[in-house]
Length: 247
Image (cartoon, rainbow, N blue to C red):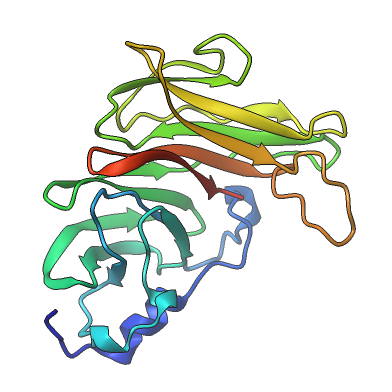
């Protein structure tokens, strides 16, 4: 691993996470930052460092908080405007997985998914318009995204229901809109199944549990939240499903 001399400012920028709600309406119109969720779904990738701008970095000094492991996400608060982003593996700092200039508007919300493989990294970039969920409605808001380059066309169903009951056909890099699911006391969990459209084979499942949690000490991570369930992996990595909070 090559060690480059980097300024302290990169570590500070990477470490910054957003503490505000990700609904566009909840961000101050006078804000000078945007909200950017970054997901590492690049098959074969070791932990990735997200570089904002062109700072010098001492990779050997970065902590785990500054690294984005495969199958995880993190929330950043970059300064609004055009920013240069680059994504570098900690095991190969001489090679940039992906780089791009992203134009981010004040107080707006974005998602960036790193997909593909180490040899051919791609992205899915979404300018979000997240649904507003009333606190008087017991609702969980879910969408689905196909980040598995090895599984081009997939369907999504709730276990026990017909194939494609939630999504009939979702191509690679495709995503749905958010759909509302009942999250009152009658529903303990949802089990979502991703299937191959061509064969009907179950590729991965995700269990959204604790849907009916009603406690003063345990946070309900389903009710009143917007969340994405992503299909990742395939090829040299096991196909699995990942939950990404959108708040």
